[in-house]
Length: 349
Image 1: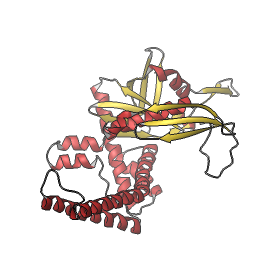
Image 2 (image 1 turned 90 degrees about the vertical axis):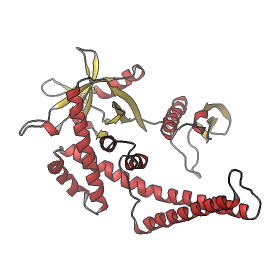
Image 3 (image 1 turned 180 degrees about the vertical axis):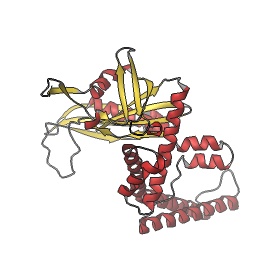
């Protein structure tokens, strides 16, 4: 199971933050370039070879940019059937409303009858056009247009509600580096602890300022790590001694961890992602039960009920995890609440 720990960069070094912004901008451009080339049918390996020359990134950053682009394309393709199903459900609901109004089963409350019916017919036309578009994408193996920076922000820019600079910032606010066991956990972005200052730092390879024949210099920015996760993160990033070599020096084994840095409203957030061992798994419908204890989970909009039973079906324990806010909060807040609730369920299990 993937575990994510959030931290925040607390640096006031304008020069280093400016360098980080530039690295984010170039990485974002490389990701968009890779995305468009993949849609054109270009080979991923060829794109990875080309990116370092065009964008002055190292090979690992180039691979990560292509990986994010591939993930975005595959997720869009996976979502197509669900989006089509959602639109078809809305079409059915709108047609039912029109029928109810036309046969007198419902009457408009706030507008007159012709205006209400006209509005529903316009909505129906838009939904059917969307349905036809999604079907075409499914048939042709293509995906709908993707707007980097967000569709809502794109329309804000068209209306002049945000500046061109703000729009560019929204399109280039991410830096991503995969974990690598053989590279001290992560090659391009590492989390380190300084015993002299008693402070956590994030060290970021900056190939944009690399001199010929030398390693890329590293940005070093202080990070605020939540106290509740500090021991866990120390165990993750410090490595474990597994022996000594022929010269008597310790052999350290590291666990891989992925790092994503995001800029939001002028603040920089670090997301540390790593694989955590999971006990238990989801059973197939017709799979015989082997474990001594089984958990059943009932998911609702405002609560998750969990019950534990024995292999024979005898009740052992249950608990309800409430999340009433899901009924009214915004999407980004909902995602946060869902993540926290799932974590609570997992910890309890």
